[in-house]
Image 1 (tube, rainbow, N blue to C red):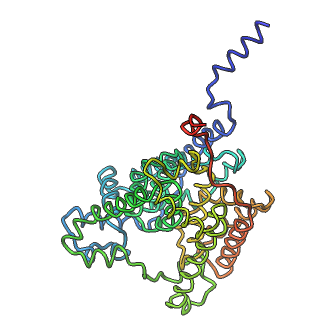
Image 2 (image 1 turned 90 degrees about the vertical axis):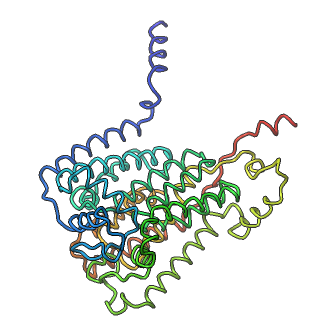
Image 3 (image 1 turned 90 degrees about the horizontal axis):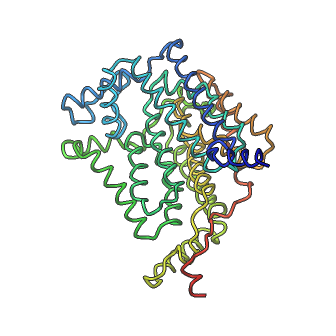
Length: 430
């Protein structure tokens, strides 16, 4: 009896952290991957691609140059928003512009990003099985992007994942701050804008209209403040170079559309068709998947318009009986919205794999596919990204795999987006 009581007492003293098998497994993955990253830095040769160009552009900025058209490197003019310059100025100061210490810094960034991503997966524990978390550590290309190429995509995606982790805390009254964090990553690289449509929808679901407008204004203010030195000096040059949405990538480097003839690839008609496909897919998923339980987009917007006329003593959350968005709904909406943008992107370069790799296990397990097919799709996508240079066959295969995942997400059941909690104030009136 005493022994049983002693065991029960020890069980109660065991932290909840170790009662859930996913958590110690995730910690083990972080430690194992940290060792792997150290070995890669020590023994795998660095690949020179953009680092010298980054340092040259940053040196021009630190030297006082404010004309974006004059900030150039050996790969051409600077085409990223001003947040890139601030981040890499810090990197240059920390590393002296040397590659080896920069690799160590990016190794730390890799582990930090992996930890944040694992936190996101642990906050939605019923989606991906514990063993599948190991897939997040098995990409040769992602390790290369972080510690052998030192691309700016690494900073952008780490900030984006951190912002998503904050959203999962359900602290929607801090939405302005969270949206500001997301906009900070946009100021480094504009691919994070792919998350903007699903994020806007989530904000509309979770906040009142005033809160949404404040978040949008805050994000816009961040962009203005970040670019202010350049906007005051050479506004046209800054806007034309940092936010060139019509830029045409080189066909040779395309990982996803190498099977398309070059004359079609560079045409405006092809770009417009992809944009239309992107918008149509977003609208379809928003109407039939993300807002299915609210009666589609029209039904959802009607409900929001109705809530604008409520007395000040009531709020949207009151009528939802203090409901909050389910964590799975938040992550699924954000990841799927970004994946749609990736599928419709005119050109994916090798570093762009970081835009969606960490969402792949989550997306695959949101489908109704059997486990063996999920693993084949994951390994197939990874294989395509490791074919260098890409070929018409590898890019066509990648597109086919992407479309298969997208179809799986479309036909997967839509979970109810809200978690309802008892409203104590309402109970008192009963």
